[in-house]
Image (cartoon, rainbow, N blue to C red; front, top):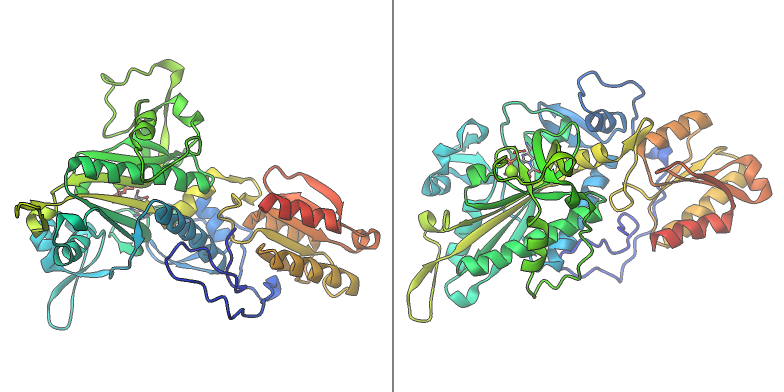
Length: 468
Ligand code: ATP
Ligand code: MG
């Protein structure tokens, strides 16, 4: 479970120690004071369900085409996704860094991509008329760091990543955060001595990606992919199925029954068997699909639309060669390093998860990414008994590390339930004047909608047992 705001250590996966000595006071998240504006009407500009729901649930607001402000509720989801990525990257041995968003054009001239990238790149000049750009990706920048910092073959392998805003001046920004111009990406880079070692790094990321998406409640299938402007010849896109997806995909049905957590993973060991298991069944995106190679037929072939939530590449010496990134071998020979890059669409994932998990009433957050775990609905705010029960529940849940949003507003029950269904927190715990007299509260699981009238203690332990 993730914690923040209540002073418990955020499990962000970064290498810094939590400051355990100082515990800030618990702040009650009262909806009456929370910055959340929900909309009843469907915004006309939103063409797909995730965009509609993100606007209606007050998660984001558009600043300009393809550029969004993240409001408190949306930002919490973004943070939760980031945290999962950090944790899984740490488990796989990758180290977090942070590179700047603005880069020197000269660096991109070295790789030849300054001209090759085209109008998607936002080009800027500073007061000294130096050409700069807002990074659409960071291969050049990380290669420059490596070039300056590593000397010997003993310095390899290395795997660094960051989670950082990117800008691509997409010709058609659309679908909200799914195809933005400014968007948050996790991009990671591996550096190895030769193909064999680089393939090991590739496998590590391949397996880490399977686990990362599964933790978010998604079925993301690795598919053979085109490597586009990043370049290279070994490449997989991680794709989730959705009718609103922008790519056509073709995959063996059996892939969708495979469990990413089925194998015990040792990131120091040989991951080739897991890689083989997933890639021996046919799966390809549009650009790579070849009906003459695809042996899957009839109903065993899933032909569907998909959302690309991640993309990994092995590109060998594509950047190390022009940028001169080499290490010295034991015999004094200089050898160019072999690189790979690994992207996750962090902000796109917020939309993608909603595409995969919603119903007519609103969003249905998977537990791992939900902005809060529990909606505590006080049906009679101001009533002494209801307030006391609600406050006590709030305290007990948040002491146990559960994130609670307390709806203490003076609103009709119907409005409160509709808002909570819309924002989709996994549990709704309702305190009402009739129930509290009998010592009961109502507990509803948002997914499935099962409701139960329970004693206060049973409701509490139902939530706590589920979460632990
Ligand atoms: P696409 O084919 O969707 O344009 P891409 O192949 O150009 O994406 P990559 O360079 O592989 O993108 O970027 C890594 C990840 O970043 C993608 O898998 C995707 O999830 C995300 N991403 C790319 N472009 C955007 C965008 N405009 N808005 C939001 N997320 C994006
Ligand atoms: Mg891609």
